[in-house]
Length: 110
Image (tube, rainbow, N blue to C red; front, side, top):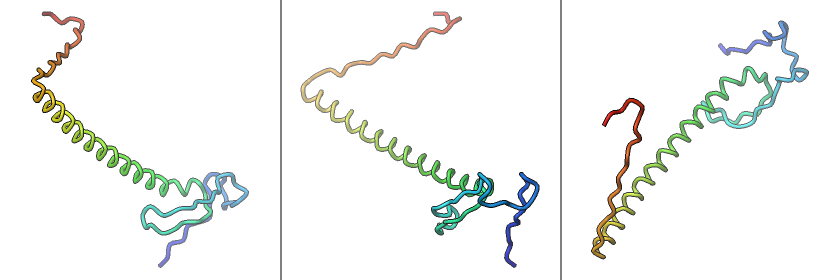
């Protein structure tokens, strides 16, 4: 049995008026669930679930790319610190000491 979408529009209370409606839009691209090409006209409201899935996938991919970039930066910073420490040791330099002072909050006592 093949399910077919109805033509009733709950916004106007009658059958869809198609191209006369401002929300009747064309979508081109790939279906985010199946990967199949999409080139169809339909109601913008009915496209929302597919577009939300696509947006979620893009967000996950962006998060993964940012995490990968972060990991590379951490690795490179560690390499740079080692090179600097080795260079300073070869020149008999004392590495600088970094002191970070915490701001005093209201009500803190010494």
